[in-house]
Length: 260
Ligand SMILES: [Zn+2]
Image (cartoon, rainbow, N blue to C red; front, side):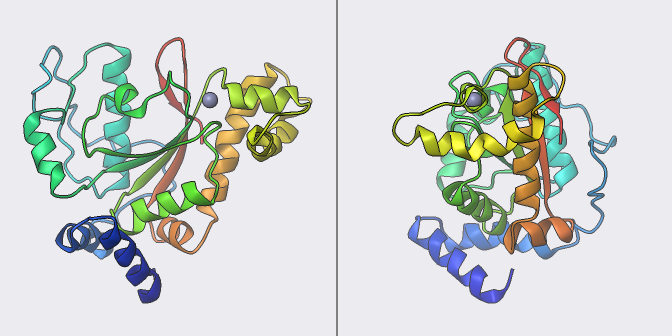
């Protein structure tokens, strides 16, 4: 990020009540030595991470270890492992204690950003078994990245130092189903459906369930768009400090599958 944009973000953060010390503490590692080793072409996570699952621990238990939250691979690993705990109902409920509340009151340092659907059945902190200050969550019906969502994600990356963004679609998404169905829409819902239309068009004529096909395509399109949106996200992806992936949440099993 160039100096001007960085300054504008810092100004934004200051206006939001985030301390300068917290901001610089988050931003500094972005240009440090932890980024170059990332393999952005690798679709899954590094194998060297210790399994954090501790079945049966209570809500005040220590969070699963994240050796380096600035690393895309480890951040993605933490998301996947949290979802595994959720699916298997071996929840750790990390970072939900009063101590954590006090800790993050001074400043946030989330390790991942989620662009998810507003659907009430897909709450990121629950399906990834995380707690306060862990996830920077942006939600809207159809998990679409409009300018406000994009600005939020850029803030997460440029100021908070998030190293992974997951676009999270889900099975039987009502917004996508409405776009597939077509026809007139009331109020501002029309704009929402219009935003999802490219996914419907990409999957027309494809075998299988048209809504599920469009859900997957919508996630893939949003991931592609985020990766190519400059200057902040595209630059971070290019220099290896940011990974942008797409996930599909299964409403029946609770499992998140990486699809992009
Ligand atoms: Zn949805």
